[in-house]
Every structure is written in C-alpha cells, then in structure tokens.
Length: 397
Image (cartoon, rainbow, N blue to C red; front, side, top):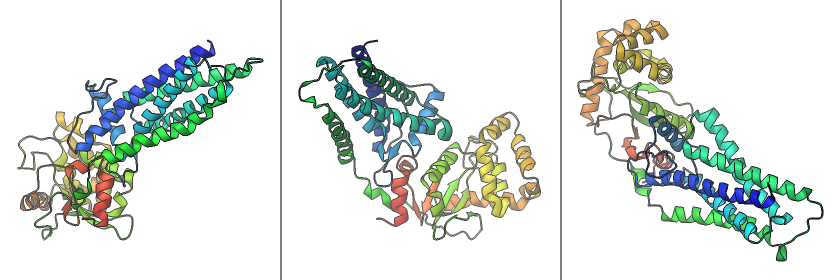
C-alpha cells in the first residue's frame, strides 16, 4: 500500500475514533443533570445495547478511571473528551497531508506518527485497566482502542515507507508541519475548558439531602466497622449485604480511597420479605440470613460482608431455587455463627434495625450514606461521589 493510501487509512480510523469517543462522552455528559440515565452502550447514540454490554459500559463509566479531576469537578472530566479532540486533530492533519500531497514529507509524517501515538499509548493503558482491573469492556472503548491501533499502525508504516524511499526529498512550503503538535495541544485544552465552564454548579449539594432526626442507637443495632486511618469521619451506612448496588458503592469508595476516611456504622436493612415487613416483594433472597450473620460476627463483621459481596450471585441463584441455601452457605463459611444467627436475640435485633429505619423516616433504599448526620444525595453515589463526598468530609456548606 502506498503512503498516500496509508494516510487515508489514518484519516478514516481517526474519524471512527472520533465517533466512538463522541458516543462515550455523550453517555458521560448525560449524567451531569443528576438524573438516572440508561446507557445505550451502542455505536449509535440512543440505541440500546444488550444487558451484558450495558453492564460492561456501566462498570467502565462508573469506575474511577473513566474521568480525571473527580474531586475538583463533579464527575470529573471524561477521558473520552480529550480523545475526541486528538482524533479530530489527527483526521485534519491526515486529510491535509493528502490534499497537499505531503505524503513523502518527512516532517509531516513524523508529526502524524507522534500525534497518532498518543491515542495508542492511552488505549494500551486503558485497555489493560479494563481487562485486568475492571474485568469489563464496552463497545465504545473497544472501538476507540481499535481505531487508535489502526491509525497508529498506518502512521508508522507510512513513516517507515518514506524513510526507505531513496532520494525522497519532496518538502512542503515552509515545512510548517511541526506546528501541528502545539496546535493539537491547544485544541485539546479548548474543549476541556469549554466543558468545565458549561457545567452546572454543584456546590450546594455538598450540604447533602436531608439528615437523621434520631441518630442515637440506644438498642445497639448499628454494626461498627473500624476505619483504617486515624481521624476518620463518623458515618452511618444503610446497607444490604446482598444488594448489588451496595457492592458497587463499596467498590467506588475503595477505588477513590474514601472508605479509609470513614468510620462507618452499618444499619442492616435487608430487602428480603422473610424478615423485612416494610417490603412486599423479596428483592434479595437470603439477605435476612446474611444480615443476621453480620450482626453476630462482631469485630469480624467486615469479613462476613466481604464474603457476601464476593458470593452475591451464587447466594442469590441458590436461594431462589432453595430458600434454605443461604443459611447453609453462610454456616459452611462461618460455622461458629450458626447458634447466634438462629437465636431470638439476633432476630429481635434485626427487627429493631428496621424500627430504627422507621423512626428516622428512611426511604426503602440501599445503599444510603449519612456523613455526620447529613445524607449523601442518591445522585452523588456514582459519578459525583468523589466530588460531593470530599466536600462533605471537609464540612463545606
């Protein structure tokens, strides 16, 4: 393939990369209104994807790697935004080289190679994180990776082909191609600046969304989880050990390093009708049994919670077909807790946990987090977690 067609291939790959990055940015920006949005997880904005692909998009979007400066900007700046700018610059440079017939101009080809190398490097890093850290992938991400590698390979082949051409001395007037790199830097900064300036103000949400009218725990229903760092802020988390949203929330806390800054007391609120009279339908079968184990574990409560998180799917699937499966699985893992779990005292304590929720007028929802009495807004438990919780921990008002 000639250098000209290789550069055309760079142009086409850059256009595809721009499209994939735009779709990803669209998904991210849709959450800035603090409402619940489904992820289309498709190459075409607005088109719904399969449950499996949507899950991959959800994991990658909500991960701490999907954006930067998350503690300074609500949700952070999506990394797909500068990717859009880089792909746009790459496309403009490639088509300019074709139109000006600069496919043999060494400086132009080197500039194209350097610019194409940026998304290749970013794709290798982000792809490794998705594969080995998140164990998930989304269509847009794969599209960006593929476009980056295609553009980078074609740019490299075009450069090597020019180097091997003996006596190729064609130069464009004034050889201004090196200016493309600083210009690309400017064009990357501009959309980021515009994005931040156009964002709504989220400063008022640092106050939280309501509080606890009766936070005292006279009945001793709260399960204390000691913080890893001294000086942690007191917090109460309304919690169901078999709630997937609770597990995802915990993962986000750990990913942001915020779990170490909280001295948490857990209020067990199982969304399981077998012990929770506040709900008509069981959402998480087996949650009552696992909650009893957490209450009985004492200082080992976190061990039970971590095990329950790791086995959520297995416990759910087994208990759906066999209501006694959850108890067998818990006692097999923690045999010393069985007597306590079956005791009337534990059953009464779990019931008192629900009465504590009623007394504080809590919504039937998990997870909920109260920091020094102030409730973290539901809209801030995903993308806005680092920004809002950081401000709440600082006591901003």
